[in-house]
Image (cartoon, rainbow, N blue to C red; front, side):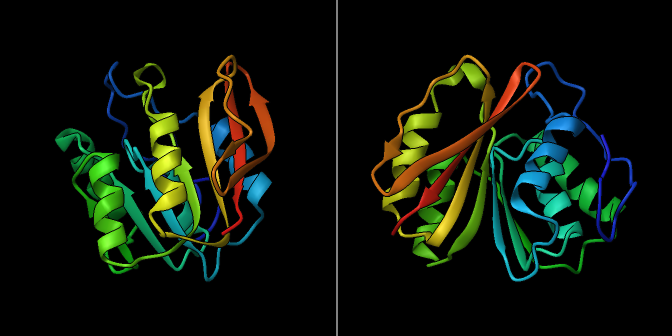
Length: 185
């Protein structure tokens, strides 16, 4: 697991090495960033279910204005901090919410933060996709034309719409799939 592009390009990231937390594969991460474009300058990025933080770290490396990591697991939180340090990103604009996605979204709403891009990679079997998508659609933290991307097993099927979140494409990468939703607020 490494940073693919940007200021920390080539840096090897620390992983959790836990069967409970599945890291995003480099080829899935690369496909995601190829789909959203080369630069993230001026973009506010939310890494929900952050795990090791590899997606959010990559976003910072590619110039995201701000990244918020949401992760409840204390071991994963330590790994996120190690990866930020390893990539020399301690002084970049990021925040780590040590909470579940549901609690984290409420905190972000209370802080009146807004996001242009959200990456969700919850545990595949825990049924967290749909309730989280509904919350995202209603909490007022998505900016106009924000994009929400779900990483999931390729056999998982989602609704076409979650209120103001509208499906517009997906990309299959091996057994994983990325589904893209646009916020039409």
